[in-house]
Image 1 (cartoon, rainbow, N blue to C red):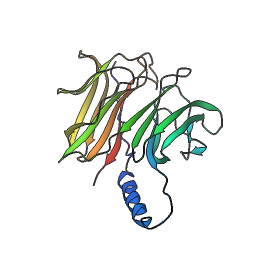
Image 2: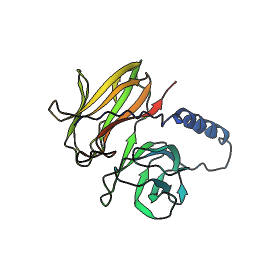
Image 3: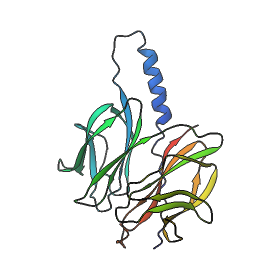
Image 4: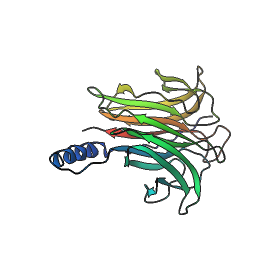
Length: 237
């Protein structure tokens, strides 16, 4: 089965701004008795194929302006470091859909994925290493978010395998790849030429970080079918 989808979103454009704010606050408070709370940054992605549109809360604080469905999410938001209660609710209601405790480190970046199907919901929290790639390189990582797909490889069409043998919730670190270039990626069943999803004509900018993921269900033929997606984690100037 071969599916094509390219969802590239700049979800981390605030990285530079957040760093600037941190420096500014530190400078302003150098001679002050004010205590600045330790913070982290968190982006949230709904990767559950049959989930409804959802709202997201950290403790009692709603993080999104409007409900987001499968394949969508919210940009990096500032969050107090430490133990936080993450709760997804059915959009526009207080009905809890999935809740768990997260531990967030000071000055760290994280991606939180809601995965699996209704009744089997799981959360996957990844620590995002947000660092400028060297020279004209970009950085790319891969995550298998399909609960019923086999182990898969991420490869460049007619080119190298970039990441190998990732089963459900398996992921790689950010890997260097030539930037300012256009790629067609194939997500293949591990060790074979069987293509499960294709992402065509993806432009990767230099000095940017991207996450490629496999989402959906092998058993589906509708909007829940397997797709490959690309999101932008950071773009450095």
